[in-house]
Image 1 (cartoon, rainbow, N blue to C red):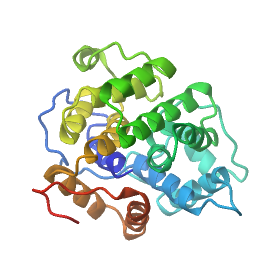
Image 2: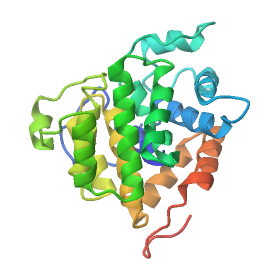
Image 3: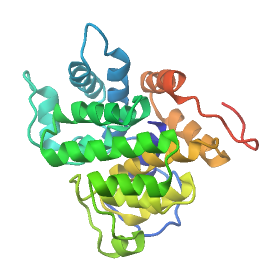
Image 4: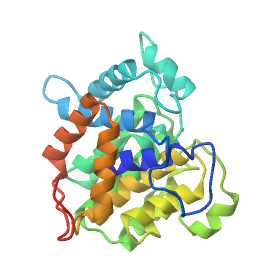
Length: 279
């Protein structure tokens, strides 16, 4: 989840102002977390609360609405239909295939014990709002990629699984970038985000590559970095990852930071490399 939050913050200033380059400050002046981070944290909170007395879907609905009530005006705002869902007395899914289901799903990939569990948790987290097949598909593809990255699968293995079960990934980043424009759908965001990860050589490079594509930049970079974080963290956090994590946590309000830290204590457990300082 921390990768998603870092990606969200890094992409926030470029959401409506694409830059199409990998040369930019990692956290530009004015960068901040958006609804993407808030709802990712809400899903993580729901997963930690779910148990015998409360099922996960019920907990997701409650957690997203509670956090949104406390933070009603994040940078970039909430999407129109989702905003209505948040305040509805009887919230129901509304058939969306927007990329909101994919931007908040990272905790499902982080916590799952099996690939099937990652897919099921992703489906449940999506369908409370995004019950269109493409909305659930986008969430499941991201959760699957995160799970596979976490357990040691190779880039080729992740690519193969996504292509077999979700999306073709035949375009390169250089082919996507020139014509890519703002797109809030899962099918217009998730394949591009996964491709940015697959072509990366480090977490920082994944982040820079995602931002360089443009589009719905905070969400696209959120998704890319949600996959890249566990993939590169397998061999330890480098200095840039440690610094970006610390800077991202510093931007969060205390209650949000507390949820992230609690999540990391339960499920994070990433070590630092020998030339990085432990947190």
